[in-house]
Length: 442
Image 1: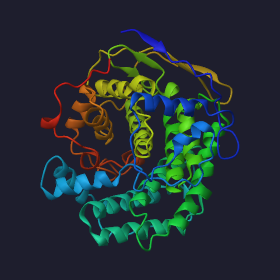
Image 2 (image 1 turned 90 degrees about the vertical axis):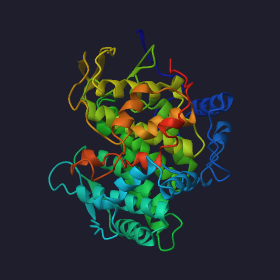
Image 3 (image 1 turned 120 degrees about the vertical axis):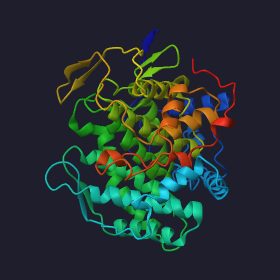
């Protein structure tokens, strides 16, 4: 297989000041014109963010987003409810996985805390991620079954945190907390957005006063380190949080910044840095593949979440750079299924504050075969929605089905990096319903 190194686009990159990146919106213009030409834009409905108008330089701050419209839409919930009520698998198995989770119970006791610390002395951040997953899982149960007890529990958890939290502190890991838990918070809140008693304004204030400034700080300054020092996941979680906050706050200026960073960001989360080598045969090397597989799989989950949120707002990032993300997901899945016949191109980068040289020449085998609930979202976009063959992702998704969520994969933070439950929420076709003429990624 022959590989090529992606080159940076010529358009301006990096964060600017104000509500949009500095410089002309060239990449954003290309995104929308290219997506329209390819028929790639998802139609999110009349309420979707009017981001496409940004190609003319219009300020769209205040335009309304589609809600629910982060990881799931109302059409998704209609499908889940119908399939579960009909007793159909794999949705019923996914539902049973959800309702068996201790976090998904209406008896959950939340522990809102004023100052959360991740990294360094006094760490207490498990209190945050456990409560976020409990809010999400209870809200998900309500959206599928109509159980008001679970709805009210989700609202109680979210209101408790938005009226209590004042800061997220710690060493550099505080930026992981701001990113991962920022987007997950929004995904939970999106499900109860219109519920009487939910303090939307208070939640938005928490996100814009605590999480968003930290997301912006990291994406701008990268903790004062060399631009290549931090792995893709650090960028991706902060990009996901920023995008989710923009949607939650109906602020297309914030959304546009997050999408612009996806295309132009100098850090390792932008599309051409996260996927530096694309090969023939439908594979692409992931930025963290030489590090270890737990983090590589985590990155697949984070980028998929970004792409799904954008898709649900009418923006197709999944097809970026010739479906490069699909090829990277195939690459990571194939290695974690036990296959060794993958190309690996030497990856080099600068570390620390002085950009000291470092390199990787082989695949990172640590954590190989680790189970994380990230695959159903990827597989069912590219197969059920777009008709592409994903043999490796399909196999690993099927092997790990039904997907669980936080609490099903251990008690440490890695088991809570993804909200999960993709078998219930993202499966669109059964294996028997899959078309026979899927298109190879090439």
